Image 1 (tube, rainbow, N blue to C red):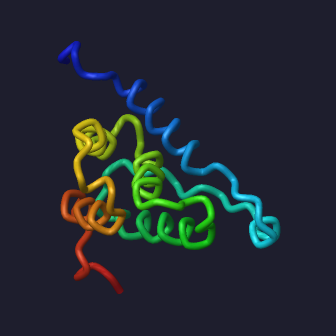
Image 2: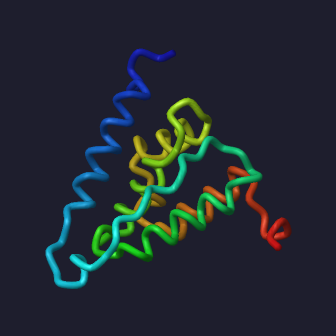
Length: 125
């Protein structure tokens, strides 16, 4: 492993910090009435569960829009849910560390995620 590259733990710490910063609670009357939701399950790169994982992430974001005020915060949340021992996190780490423009668009990131991890619409019911 290249000693110049950050470790997986360092990447996770960076992503958690970014996620925490993006999830700063907004005090509004509507946010007080929202029931807490469980986080979606983590994702390890299995194409068979890619669609379900992305659906759960989308629903979590949709149900708590006050927590995701930027496209980048949505991307950071999706990356936060990737399993630390899987190729999915390594793939995302490379994109995040390169500060690729794709991390500034949730839809673009999610579409690229689908391409890489094998989610195909033909498998939908």
